[in-house]
Image 1 (cartoon, protein in one colour):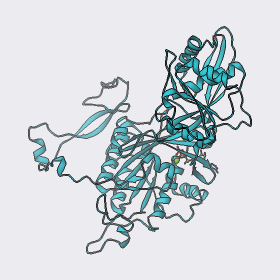
Image 2 (image 1 turned 90 degrees about the horizontal axis):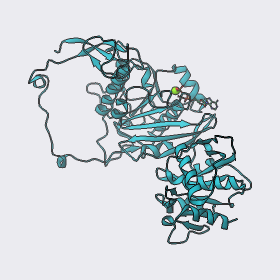
Image 3 (image 1 turned 180 degrees about the vertical axis):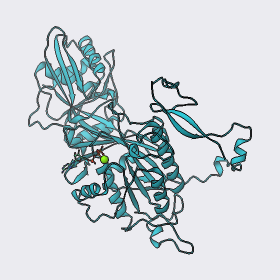
Image 4 (image 1 turned 45 degrees about the horizontal axis):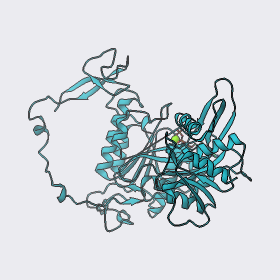
Length: 493
Ligand SMILES: Nc1ncnc2c1ncn2[C@@H]1O[C@H](COP(=O)(O)OP(=O)(O)OP(=O)(O)O)[C@@H](O)[C@H]1O
Ligand SMILES: [Mg+2]
């Protein structure tokens, strides 16, 4: 057996050193090295041969490629970002600001999964010698695709491990969400070894760990939430998920800057990373996939937080448009594409006479890009805002990173400067280059169709995005340059 040895690991980066040092040799942070117990193996030539027999290797072609089987969570917006549903043995990390609704979302999802699994009232226990696995074990498992149903794991057996709240608090939330009769199994525990033993014994189909920062392992002396603990616990849980086929969802805290707390390696370890975000002043919440080994990223799901919990918003376009009875100056609607779904977002601009050093501010859009667009507008279309304050905002707390917003930003600025509203039912999108050219946006047809579906009737779009076949109800003005776009706008007055 390997000899036990002490190493010093850094609380900031998780790096190790054989002796105590004032400064971490890896990340150069001061006073972060803490003593931890490490198991080391003497570096002899055949050290692994002594520990295990050689494993068999296989040609890729000989390995059966089974399609991943997805179980929908019943929350369509969550399923959309997961790529269709949860996957057996998959590990999902979900991060978000405090109080955004992570626990609410997962409790609702678990309850749905439990009900959809045929109302399995309790998670199946391990089979005793000579005892047949419970008959409910294989129920609902499709016969084809995926791996064979687990002998003891019942579909619909779900476990909610809470480290932040007591069982009573979870029950209180469940009651508020209208899930009084829920058969979701709850475990209030923060010790990793106990959690792993429970997972092993209960074999749930899905387990939620709320949150990974509260879990600690007895093997390490550092406090729960420290880098070493988070890394170690996540690694053990990931291994448990892969070995047993249980899908594990880890809730992760975020740092002040909004990134997931803990070591960066956490994001590499798991299969899917989701962010749950939203404006604290609005009830809308967005969930987006940052990484997904089982599906596309950049999908977003939209929820509304209500007293009865999170409700999916199937037509999110409506929430990013402010409700003006009549068009107002400085407002232009654009169609942005988040993942596979086009979204209509209103861009608002306010141009007002400024002081000696005019301000340029943007909310939800890139500020450097705004400065660039103002220069393009002046140079190529002769619209000057040099002595004006310019404020730009994407309505509804949405963040737009794609350059297809450029044309809508320019047109809303022009509209505010002129004090003239854009026509009723007007939309625009397209990227604007430094030479004043208007470049196409990806999947222009889909964007135009979505706009037409929502009753928009006039559009200024890049020439390359103009549809070959007319779209019913939509008059399209294709443009190649910024000055053409401003010209087309004047023609619409
Ligand atoms: N009665 C209520 N009516 C409407 N919304 C409520 C009500 N009670 C709680 N909420 C919402 O639920 C949110 C808390 O949700 P939840 O506890 O799931 O968040 P969380 O992301 O798990 O937070 P934490 O980081 O503290 O674990 C509150 O911020 C609030 O928006
Ligand atoms: Mg919570």
